[in-house]
Length: 164
Image (cartoon, rainbow, N blue to C red; front, side, top):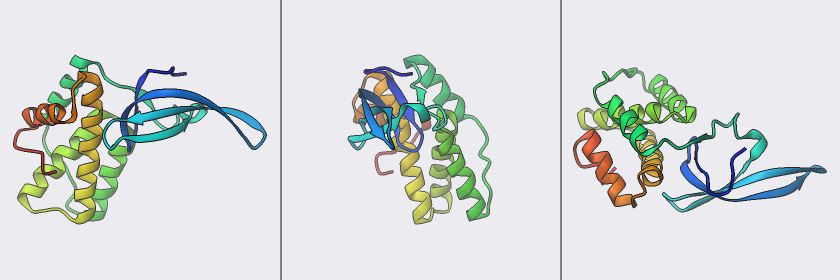
């Protein structure tokens, strides 16, 4: 079980800090919930402590570890289906996994595809979601603000990413 102040990642939403633990009565039984604050977008989410593991909740990476993970993605070959439906499903599965490496691959692959051919509206939204997830974890692991996190992302993946 996580504690107040822990920094965790919630797949599809990104990294945040547990602000509080609350007990709520649902269907006659008391259940614990994490109150998670996500810095990017200033979201506040309640997550069932009992379901945290099955939802893919994990601790954030450390300062050096996150840079290693992001750096490992840069040189990997781009592999994406040419079929839009298949590509979308595969990318969504990677984001839902909650694994930073998978999310970073989605971001990098879609960013490169956008430069070559353009993206559909749905894929642009997916790329933005992947970027926000990465930024939220960078902000918390590196203890920086959003603009500094974007600069780290730009240095890691190259090219200006502020318009994404």
